[in-house]
Picture 1 (cartoon, rainbow, N blue to C red):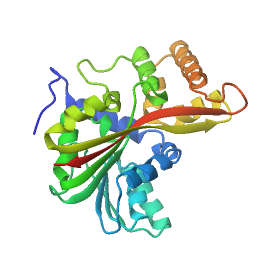
Picture 2: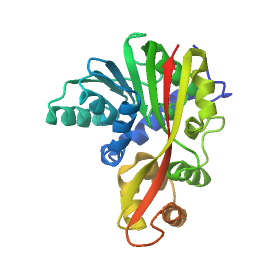
Picture 3: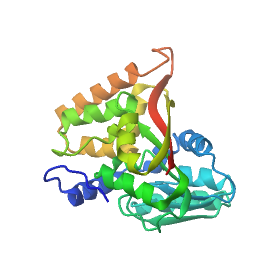
Length: 275
């Protein structure tokens, strides 16, 4: 296993804070707005009936459920128990048989080389030790199997949102940005030791709101990273962050002020065939 070299970064402490952030708010409400990304990803990975599929950092189960709809044998893993409960409810409502396990993207609770397809939708990219997260995705995929990823790009809407957060709340020194996963070159660096081929496709996830203010209120209520950012700021600085995020919404609005907002959230879809 490789190890990310980040000086004296306390990965245990960082992960604990991240876990608390994702458990705050209600990410399942955010995930309901990006279901299409998971459906597209399992199609790009060519998931077949009977395939063994593992969805890493599954959250409320978007990609796991998408794979189960295609009659795959599916396991979803996440380290936020409340999100796994939502995932189980969703799978039960659709009469789909999916196993959901509590686990860490950097230490997956499954055997090596035991899955035909391994997916992660805006999930493993947030693991603090990027090399370890990439190695785990590779470890559990069988030779000739596929690793399918959806990663926000640094220049897209979500990527720039995190850049704004970093201006108000400096990130942990030495910790690499999760948005690096939105670069094809970075993913090839992380996965090259175990990869035969890479297929990269840039896509857009559309966020539609009646106003920039509605978008802001939604994210600061339900999206853990946004909620936690506001919690750490005083009233004056919080207002500055609100203004920056509203301006961001307008900049990424492809409707350009003509009625409701339609914001383009660019992401990189990558399908890796394991050597």
